[in-house]
Image 1 (cartoon, one colour):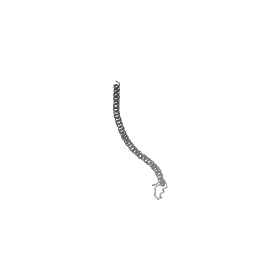
Image 2: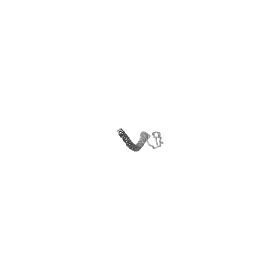
Image 3: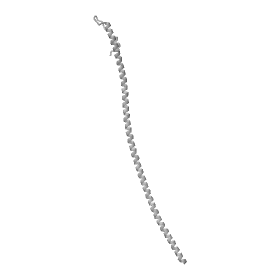
Length: 150
């Protein structure tokens, strides 16, 4: 690519019926000025483009990172919900097992208490029968003694 200096330093061969040197020099100076301006503008635009492309890459990277973060957050939320559901089910099952165990223990205690009650009831009946027999024997003995005393 031609630089403004290339244009400025360009020498043309002279010929017999050539162009007016002064007009060519004035025109070349104008071309050099315009070309320098275009060249600088082009360089500035390239720098701006590079800077904007860098920013674009940065923002695209940020977008990708945010997207990945959002996906991870959604997956984490789903995992948390799933784990909470599993933990709830586990707690519920444990509570049901404990409730069943407590119910079985209570039922067992009631049966033992009923058995003890039945045993005490039998012992009470036996004790009453013995007391009744003893009292009857004592009464008979008293009657026999009274009869003997008479």
